[in-house]
Image 1 (spheres, rainbow, N blue to C red):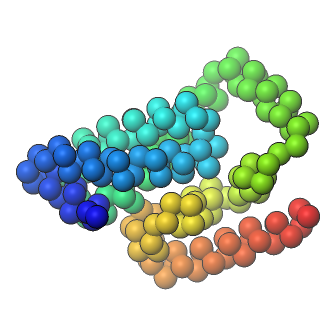
Image 2 (image 1 turned 90 degrees about the vertical axis):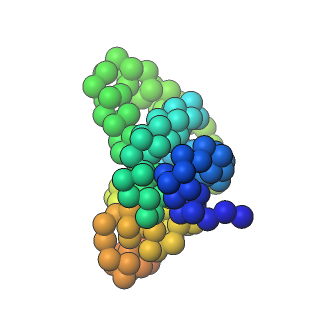
Length: 172
């Protein structure tokens, strides 16, 4: 198995397209899953993955130190931008609100319930938990992504997990 840093360094130094393709295959499904967990629908998540990898490929060679964390930072920003664009079009959001309210009448599965519970946390807490436990990034990678000390990330992850657990207990 290839290390993501090694693959991206090979891409940057030697313009090795096969290394970038291996990195893409390693990360694209995880990134798509992460974006869906953040609330993107299937189609939007695919679009965001494509846009994120495009921006990633154009900028990663400036600092290939932590490519996975950098890719997720781009994807989060892309998702936020897409949400802002959607909010700028009120006629589209009315349709989605109607559809969302119809969905709340139907029983929800455990995955959807957990996603809704995670949505009650702050955005930084959501991103931290999703990166750590959904995607499996290390505390160090998350720290680099969020521009925080690693110890802070560890404490915030523990506090966010405790808060999520408390909200889970309250919802039962």
